[in-house]
Image 1 (cartoon, rainbow, N blue to C red):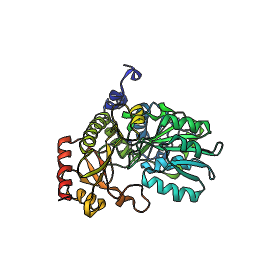
Image 2 (image 1 turned 90 degrees about the vertical axis):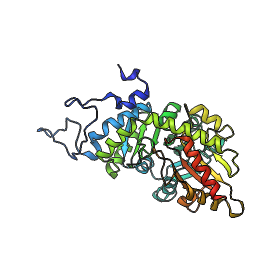
Image 3 (image 1 turned 180 degrees about the vertical axis):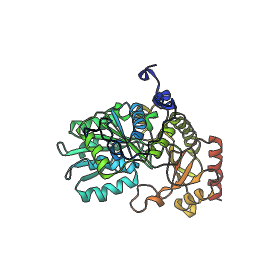
Image 4 (image 1 turned 135 degrees about the vertical axis):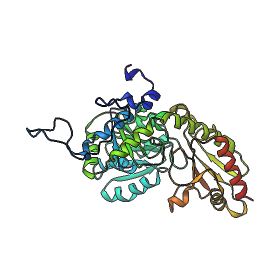
Length: 387
């Protein structure tokens, strides 16, 4: 069968159907070599020179994620941060960029410190409001609009198509951090984005055992070539074994994301209006501010991430939230998201001063355990925290 005729679930499960031409193995080898033979006439006809830029261990994973995102090419990086910062480092000092006020905290810190010191003009805007984006754009000066949707840790939603149209009208490129949505639920390139980024540590791998990042481009243009040059020259490349692990993880991507999304929806609905919960932040709730946009651009679910704002009573919401996390038994108190195990954390403690996370907020990454067990564990933890 032509791979173009297959559903994405089939492409992911069989890693594009690749079979080793020599051994006939269905699991790829791990290419550990860092260097490759030059031909006698001083050429590299193999296309490989040095593994920092031309590692054959990348080929299959990059091809798979590019296919799932309906993009032209993919590029693996040593981390999500390495992938994201490579996009900004491919710009020139003095370029104006827009980024959301609510976004992954480590990248926001990098933008407001390193990137601005390097010379980028970074402006944070309410990316959920197209009018705010339109006002902030500087035609001829804004070179990049960075979107994160759903946005960590409030899970706000940005209209990718509307924002891309505004950005392109001003001459800017659009990059989307789609880590939480994954290509299972949203394909930003089809909505007008130029680049999609994933912290592949999270859902793409899905097993909490590697750090990785990936970019996919809609077109193989000069900007994409600059990004790949940044990767090679700064050395933000992934290891061969990690590439193999990532490919293995993506085989179950569709099963894991759909299971986590269904459970997250159940948990959000269960705790909406709960006596110990001030608010549930989840785009799949009809009362959520971004529900209409999310329903339009997320197909098959609203993701496995949600946050609970815990009522505090006399002790205060922050104290009650931390106490709730202390009393969970099945949920794991740990930072990260997208793994098979469900995680919980008090996000404001992680992000520190200036965080948009309210002090009463618990961030939840829903795994693939039975949803009734997850709900029961949260129920007993909330009851004990308020006892």
